[in-house]
Image (tube, rainbow, N blue to C red; front, top):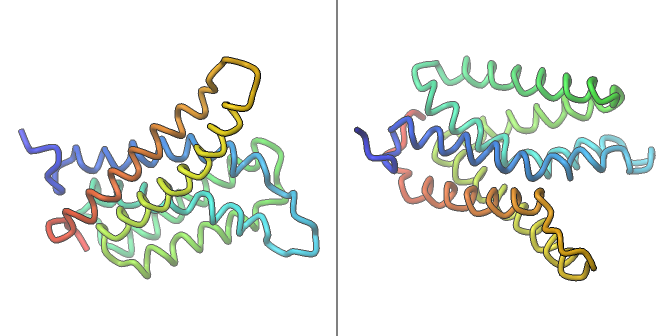
Length: 187
């Protein structure tokens, strides 16, 4: 059985995917809960909001899937991943009635793809995606803990628990990618 922390083992790839799913679960309510609050005078403001909140998990997911699909040529993988990102995002926006945000999601998906092209290496994708997601979730966790501590209710919100676990997992995965970078394949 391969060592789970070995960067070329499927367990490491699955850890990336799980961390991306956890961070998406923690960030989607925030990223999706505040669209179109910007005034019409700011074009593509929602695209900037989506990009700031969802790029980290999307890049981390790309790293995990790339390690699982390492036999695919790089540009074929990036084309497929971009298409998957576009379809999933657009379907979600149309399902909840935010059809006017389709262009914003297209811009976000293209920004994510551009970053993947610029970063080139899978270990950079994992490190940037994990650290970006963990830091952003950490900010939301601090805000959530401050709100929880000042509330009169004793019920700990489930979203905050997911955000805490997601932040820790994403930061661990990001650091693992930095530490194991020489052994991560493919480029």
